[in-house]
Each structure stands twice: as C-alpha cells, then as structure tokens.
Amino acid sequence: MESPTLAGWVGDVKAFTGRQWQREPAVFTPETLAAPFDLDALDAAFDGGLLRTPYLEMVRSNKVTVPPAAYTTSRVVNGTTYDGFADRTKVVGLLQAGATLLLRCVDQWHRPTGDLVARLSEELDRRVEAFFFVTPAGGQGLAVHRDDADVFVLQVAGRKTWYVHDAPTVADWSPGELPDDEHSPRLLHSVLEPGSVLYVPRGYAHHAVGAAGLSAHLSLTIRDISLQDLRTALEHCLSEGLDLPPRPLGEAAIADACATLLGHVRAKLDTIEPEDVRLAARAAQARRPVATPQAHPQTLAETARNWETDGPGARLTGLASVGRTWRRLRGGAERPAR
View (cartoon, rainbow, N blue to C red):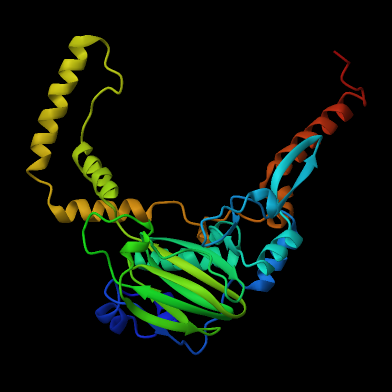
C-alpha cells in the first residue's frame, strides 16, 4: 500500500500496513495535519443556507430518535413548502441537551473534503466517504457498534474518549449496533486531543463519548470488497465476449439464448482465476463516482469568460452578425412577421 495522503495521517505507511492495517486499532499524533472540515466550515455551511437532510442528522445513544423537525426548518420556494433545511438555533439547543450532530457524506458537498477523499480513494483503490460528528461533553452519539469499513478519525475540536473492542469472532457478522450481551473486552481506551488520529479496523466494535468542550471529529470510512462486489465482478467476467440479443422473442429464441449463455459461462469458468475476480471487483470499486478535482467541469466564471470564443455565445454572435449583414444588403428591411 502506497499513499502519500494516508502518510499525513499515520506517518510511515509501510509500518502501518505491516502492523495495524486491518489488524489492530491505534492512535497517531501527526505533527502537521490540517482538517479540511472544522467548526468554522460547519458554520459556513449553515450560513450558506443550503445544508439540509439527509446530509445532517441528530442522534442519541439511548435509541431515542430525534425527529428531523426538531433540528430543521421549512422554506417556501415559488409557492411550494420544502422541509429539511438545517436550523442552527435548533441544532445548538439539541447539542446543549446532549444530542450529537452527524453530517453525512461531507465529501459530496464540501470541496476541500471531496478533494481529500478523491486522493485517498485513488491511492488506496477503495471507496472512501467522509462524516463529521459534533458531540457535547458527556454525550454519546452512537452506541457500541461495528462498521463495515476501516475508519480513520481526526479529532478537530474538544476532546473525545474512544473505546475500541475486538473484531467479530465469526465470518457471518453484521455491521451496526451490538446487543448488550455481546460487548467484548476493550482493546483500546484513549482520549483524543485536537490533531490526534485514531484508526479502527473494519468490524472492530467501538464507541466514543465527549470528554471536554464541544467535541468534533472527521471520520473517513474506507470501504472494502463485499461478497456482493465479488458476485458482480464474477458476473462481469463471465459476460465478457458474450453476444446475445437483450430481448429474445418467443420460447424458441429464449431456449437458444439459455443454451448459448450456459455454454459461454462453462467455457469462461475454465479460464477465470480468483485473482481475476478480485481485480475486477477492485476496478469496479475504483470506477464508482468520486468528486475528483479532474472531474469538475469548468466553473461558471470560466464559462462566462470563454463564452464569446468557444461557447454558445460565439455561435449566437456569429448568427446575429450574419443577420445584420443580410439586412444591410437588403437595404435594412426587417423580416416580415409570421
């Protein structure tokens, strides 16, 4: 694994992959690591006025659901009422009452975070997502749970106490909250200060409690291949080179398509190796849409600057010029009304 971006979080990537990666939790204290998203960026998102559900959610660990109406407001646009817009006053009130603010998929709506996620995703050849949590002292947003992803946590503000338990003991495990009788012994207990990084391997149970101040952290989830990914990749491998009409007409045509399909799959199975399926799954995961800097179209300002030379405006200007010339040649006569 080579990743300059990850090196900024964990230091020596080779040492990290050899010891901790998908093996054990760890805490790192990088010297210079700036969070792309912090409380100032969150305030800017509130000020912008477009932050809304499902990108924000308020949660409690006591399994009491916080209804969206408790932290959002409605707006009337062109005579239609739309719900779900973030209400900072309500959010602050719920934080003071012990609830946690969860921001989902920050990479989709915050450009610096999206750039970070895009770099890391490309370097690790895995899908990456970003989440942001704000928790008051003594608050706990989520109960003990397992994530179907490797998780990197960057403490941004305040202090937060983390508890990490062991990995699943069976292969048929499920992500989500653990029943009370399944809590396993702790492997790690640490209080994160601003700038500290915590790594939680995929499937390892964990939870966090605000320790001091208004605690905020950025979480990056690194998704790995699932069984469904492998099934999809296998189907792709088996379908390569298959040329059949998508909609055979009649029972005879359907029977012929079945025979051709089975013959093709039997022949393909003799040539496909496990590594082929794994690589196909990795490639498919890398092709998932990510907000890469290269993927962004030119800005509207750039479009405006170039409008007369290479945009629709250039063509319209040219047509208008032709029209004016034609009218001059006809002695200024305008086209009759139709």
